[in-house]
Length: 175
Image (cartoon, rainbow, N blue to C red; front, side, top):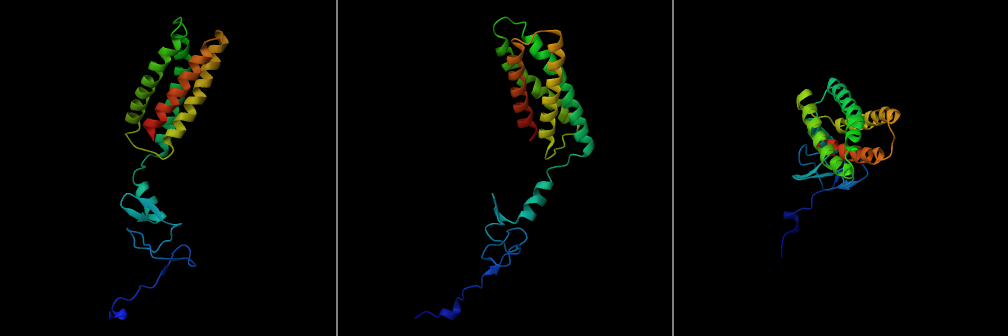
């Protein structure tokens, strides 16, 4: 007969954040007891929210000045692109939408590369959202200016294609 006292069952721990919850799980970085509500699954195991946020904070090094520069460049790109690109492509008789499908992502990629060089390749948690927001606002301003001088017929379709493809490209490259 096996001796039961040789292999005692460990006492369940209490979660550090929820003292009423028993757990057998520990953060694999700081060894703090955590429950399933507090655990964050990572590729290397479960970690507590504090360790995960400390790890993520290392990747975001953008300063307030970087955000200001990004917003200025994004607004300028949105205004110029929103005014000129749909207007220029509207002079192409039938395939103006096709020209926008090619030109908008290419120009947004170039704008992203320029932006990354200006801010020193630093990353920000909300940099993509900030730039996309000002690009939309700048594009609306550009469209408003162009609409004062010309009709809005095909321009709205071109503008819609421009803004959707530009925002998708910018956000994907800045996240």
